[in-house]
Amino acid sequence: MQKKYLIDEERIPRRWYNIAPDFPEPPAPALHPGTGQPVGPDDLAGLFPMGLIAQEASMERYIDIPDEVREIYRIWRPTPLIRADRLERALGLRDDQRIFFKYEGVSPSGSHKSNTAVPQAYYNREAGVKRLATETGAGQWGSALSMACQIFGLDLTVYMVKVSYQQKPYRRVLMELNGAHVYASPTAHTETGRKALQDDPDTNGSLGLAISEAVEDVVGHPGSKYALGSVLNHVLLHQTVIGEEALEQVGAADAYPDVVIGCVGGGSSFAGIAFPFMRETLAGKAKTRFVGVEPTACPSLTKGVFTYDFGDVGQTTPLLKMYTLGHDFMPAGIHAGGLRYHAMGPLISHAYHLGMMEAVAVPQTKVFAAAQMFMQNEGILPAPESAHAILAAIDEALAAKAAGEARTILFNLTGHGYLDLGAYEQFLAGKLEDYDHPEAAIKAAMEHVPSA
Image (tube, rainbow, N blue to C red; front, side, top):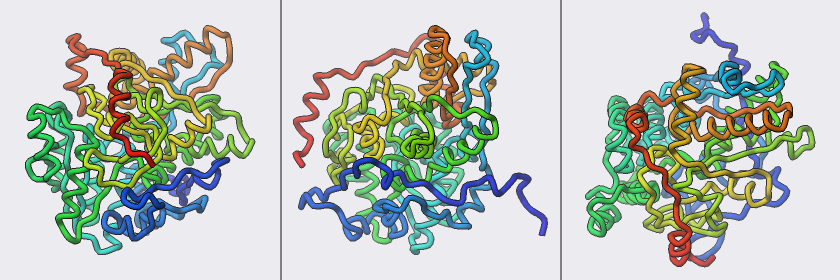
């Protein structure tokens, strides 16, 4: 039988990597908000199929990727590892000061989100689920899940954060082409949404609010399940196909990184590139630094508090120990919509708390300037989220240049920005503004965070 895909199938990972058993200290469990006790499978069964619940709590180092999922991965995997040599020359770097990026924008949805959308839809289909509900920030997750649901024959309802619904209309169109029903959150369809609109009819919405609407939707529709695009352990697990591929690719290129960089919102893209390399560092096989890059408008790692908090505004989720700005956080309308979540995923938060990684917060005007420089030299327009990693990679390279040090830098280019041209138009017109989330707002939000 002739092969459908003209790729080396053996280079697509056969297993996802779970970092949890390799931490020097175990991560804190999720807690039931009513009892304060660790959640069990039954507590999550209303939201997720058992296949994903098992992965969420797993302490197995590796989990096999189902053949049917791997078959779909072949559409875009393995993704390329590219040396940014033209950017290096523009920065005036030496030959031993190198920048590489793993490009996830070649997926059908244009971002890394398809890496988890496909297995989530698969496990739900296997459990007999017919309908999913979810939230999306900038729309990459909703786009990816709509494709996956179309493949596996699932209905999908998406609650898209209102400011992104307005800023990025073609993401909505992409979802609708795949048959999804897309609503600007907050909506009048849920109690949570109606309350938010009553409190502030002009609200931009937030990921925490959209999550509450999606969860409420699932509870009100028997037979439906919820899907999440970041934060939770099983989501980060699926993304490790990125780093596992990159490990093999940097070996072939004699380019093992001194530093690995990724943008951080909920944590899925950073975990995807970083966790397999962290495994090598934890095992003493390498000495690599890891840098997560977040917006100054939503600085959960650099300014947040490491404590138990809800994952949503409506306080319907289990309590997760994470760096948080408070579950009722309402972000500024920056254009990196995928990085506007109020907290960081528990596994990323645990790694940061243990000192296994660094974090920096950067303003959006510098991010967009870095994106323009990257496009002019490498020919790829990055998503605004991905451009946070580009800015940090440039800063890292210039620091090596100033110090006269050899350095190999690897960053995750999580997706393209060709559906974000409205944001770039605002940048070119000089209409983007930087925003620093104030300490006073964080202090006030912490008063509403539950004591666990």
